[in-house]
Image (tube, rainbow, N blue to C red):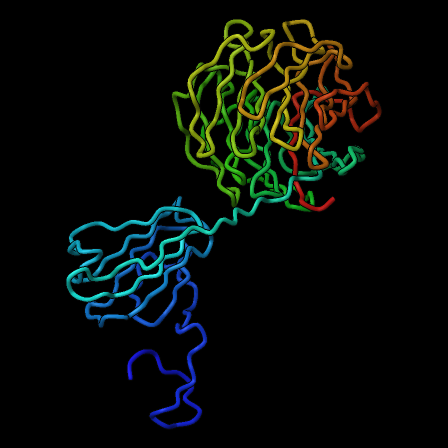
Length: 419
């Protein structure tokens, strides 16, 4: 008798109780290397690193091993199979065997010495879980004439709460974005001179103390979510305009500078679009600009696209809609304007729409309520505390006033899965 024998309750050679599934599943593998055995199944978690899987050095025809992508991350960190002296689909083990598709599962069966290990099945789960959209938002920091460290939470119905004070270093002209699906991050800005600190925001809207040393200090930059659960800071002024970016992981860790990503400029806006991509737009260098730069779902910034509505600086941007649209709004040319530009879910910026509330610049914007957005605060020559809600179809509402302390140079981001 051959095969896997398990739990032989009759203790005789002729009656065998079949093993459930025929395999013994092992604890989740998170290491960068693992040696596997026949008759077993392995969940391979490559969230933090790639993994090299060494097969047995000896095998018998019919031996079986199953490997499964535990966290749907093989597309980011692939697995490599070392067939350990045996053939793999007729090729010797000097060949490199990689699997790099999210959600993959591999059923390996040993067929004999000629062909060796063969994937009896090599499938990808059709399941692609999509995180629920963020429901709440937060405005933070800014200047009332002097820098402040206050925040204002926004409910899932677009109601702005009163001021919360004492949330890290007071500063203005910083940026903010969502990360990790339901959290947010404020970063950089000016205290009178540029800083490179960040403040994480929990899924319940609590702002953490300062984290320092996260790339080149600068202000007048922008930030957006990308890749479903990550973020990117970009551009700004570090005494002179820069074109650098800093990626943010899905755990809120900010990476070192990446330079050379389009025209250096400041007083720019950014937002996510298309579900997993981002766009930077407008700004100022030696004059107003109407250019944009798209960001891929892996955080790669593309070259400049010009001619996307009225050139201006100090606008704000946010995502809205159920299919990944976005909106740029307001700004200065140098007088303040109240125009908006819608962005399709493939990153195409539309012509100007005018007459959408009080003209102002240096404001903030964020998504809320799953498919809507909010513009808030800014300057009309002096700081204001008004907001404008944006519907799920991109229609901007009239002003709502009295929403906390008036200030400019503010940042905003969405957070929280809970309404």
